[in-house]
Image (cartoon, rainbow, N blue to C red):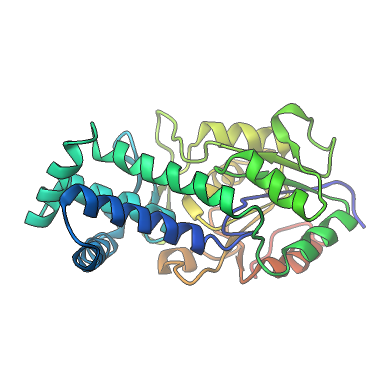
Length: 307
């Protein structure tokens, strides 16, 4: 076994299957839009699906938009689909969206405020109803990582309590990363890690034709504190763009390798970005259970290799 090895990982989408939580958000948004617009559930569903098709038809224009800039794209980040539908309603390109926009603004200051409330209300409720929902095989992989003395650091936009509580259900103690030192405990978490927040000065990398803003100061601070060997996530823009940028510029905080989860919605531009180059993604990770192979290979190698 080699010396210290640090693995920075996202939580939802890597260690969990967030499909049920996402569907709950969709259901909340549809229900509230129907209520505000006086539209029946039967009529709201096809209208919502129409809005969804419209935003997915132009994924480069929709996603998690903050201060007019896209932090992630709708085709890579399916949790951004409801908010992208909100953007479509805000832009009001058709009669149905114009009517719904007016209906939302009768009760809310902005469409974004309405969407934020739907997200927070639903996700908080989901966490009270579901106290643990790790993907199959996650516990075995975590046990293997601990046995191999890998430092596991969760950097997630979910609250730290979610990670701490879900792993506590399985008997694992996860400590808060902000109140502990790197290497002090084998399992640590940075909740609300701010991966979405972009710096004032854009730093862009072109990933197979999709331009991604890589400068994310809050996330960068975490990476510079942890100096990971490996970073894995399910959304390239949020989880991997900043680590890749650090590696490309030769920063000691840049990981040796990065991996993206291969989910059913992973878009072609992400798949086409897999490769050994400094601004590419080294691994397409089929499932959490592939991590031991990746870690073992990286520990035994002095340089990155595509998988």
